[in-house]
Length: 307
Image (cartoon, rainbow, N blue to C red):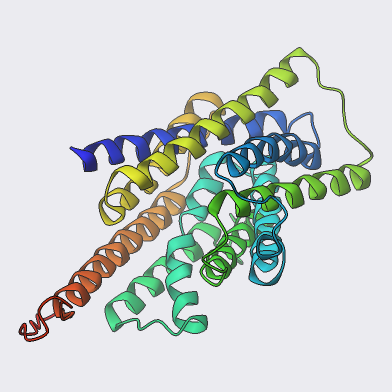
């Protein structure tokens, strides 16, 4: 029952994030990217700061602002800039398809930078995932859209963010990190608005779109936290890919998008390789748990199963 609740929370969060993306894309037609980042992250600064304080955490603890936390936040800024820009320039379904490659690249980065052992099966899944991105982008082909590289940049930023997060001191709370990241992202929005010529006063429709961004972004974040706390991570995580399904539906219904065969094929390769990677990781962790010798029974036999 807990896993079912976790799955429902995860699906709900992905739906909320897809709707947030739609509001961002619609708002980007009249408002500069920097202003979109500023509004969204200024609200997040208030929310995450309040939660962190309620949890008894200091908002400006050194560990949340320097070292690997700083690297994490800079990566978050790079990723956010890439993704919001991509939403403004390319179809929603295309941006959502490319962003699904993040778990695949994380496997590659963990092997290269964290020294994690990756077997040939997961390496094969990484290759398939990269091929999927290549199929979607079609570099050199007639259908190639250079603006899609903004989404690729976002994936790279997300990957580096996750690697840096694993190196942040365990004493730094998640809400402290979220607060510091939002502060820096708000600063990024201000800097971008200065370059873009300043903020634009939205009309009633634009204000409504900005409100939608904030509301659904907050709902999505809350639901994904609830999913992580309710169900088993290995069971719940694969349902992150429902975000692409929601993006395809919203893109078709609201923006009249019709993804071509290459986009759908590439997305299928990315999701398939991602699900296989998650399955292999789950099996590997299960094996490690089985081979661990319980401290309460030092003489317990070690069980070795074929991975």
